[in-house]
Amino acid sequence: MLSTACSIGGGGEDASGGTGVEQSVMQTLGTEEYQVTTPKAWNVIKKSDFTSDIPGNAEAVFQANRKNEVFLTNVNIVKNNLSQTLSSLDYGKIVIANQKNTLQNYVEKNREEFDTTIKGNKQRIVFVKFEGKRTTTDPLLTFAQAYFVNDRTAYVITGAYANSEDPDVQKEADAIVRSFSIK
Image 1 (spheres, helix red, strand yellow):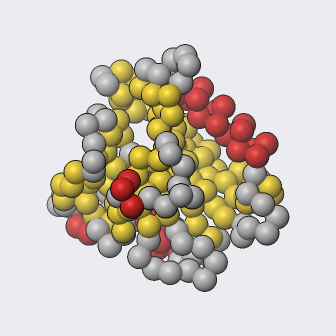
Image 2 (cartoon, helix red, strand yellow):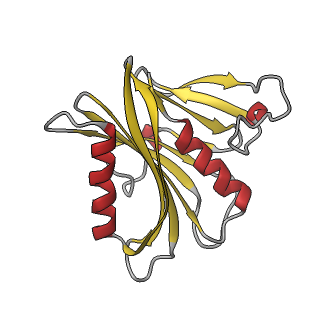
Image 3 (cartoon, one colour):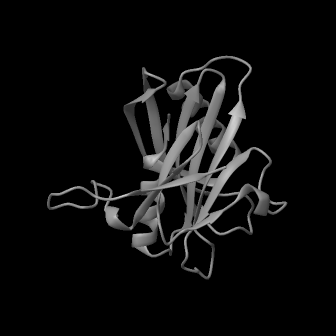
């Protein structure tokens, strides 16, 4: 179950916290395991309301409240159990390689590595943006993903939006992905 706590931007000139999204309109949601910050205007889809097209390992889905003709911008959190312990960075590289082989018209746009703390341990994680589509008839989408591993539990947080999506909505989706953290 997701719990809610409001996140208000601190003093200073840039109330976006470097994300380009105004912090006073954000909320922090989470479970005992993780937390994520989303715009208050985004819809939170509860697990009990998931439709059959949402994978069983999905933990949460957030949808932009603006309709796009091509695709409804969303961010989802997926939880996977691993057979062995991997670093977040190694797991991310494995998932990225799989995306390259699975998606059609795959083009990596940006990749960044940075340090985070997971259960008191410093880990390097990867954030990647890429374009692709699942089938030839699907629209070309941009995906933003980050990968986190705690022992044998892996999380993939994915933002997905049409390239024609409003740039502000794209920034919001990217900011949600970047805000994810394991408690």
